[in-house]
Length: 235
Image (cartoon, rainbow, N blue to C red; front, top):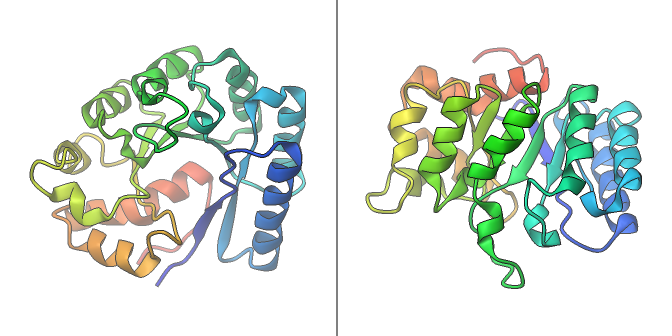
């Protein structure tokens, strides 16, 4: 029942050869099944112009539709100056950037660098940039919601979370049920983080959440289709 799926080249470490090969692998899948898959590139901001040229190649030559930055695993914050040229390039290319925010489990680096409030500073500096806060920002769920309320170009993505927990009392996710059903219904995105969370489980659990039916359609595909410039028939 999935029309299209987004595949992130989710680079964390290993250097240029690692993320270039990862981008090539994603491009191979997308090229083989363009009607089914959408590619999102991954790079390392510390590589400067090398990373910018890789992104340019991925979008212009391979047809990728966005950039994924896993800055926590490079010991960077999203506001690190080395990320800014990539943000400018995303604006130039007309693509969104997806940034890991919230908790991560690499104990070499502090999670304070991933507070989603940092996205507010980026959105102020790049008002044309479309930003996706990956994984919902927990434990700073309200902070990410506040940033999205201030900036219509900021989106909230809830991959890597078993959807049933979004409505579980005292789990810390509950505010998205309120704002996702109302003020932010055009800025919420569905995600899975497959293979750690299967498509079947994620879709099944998400359908059981107390979102309005018209809101579920937006979260499942309409918001993402608009964000990525895709044409997908309504169900």
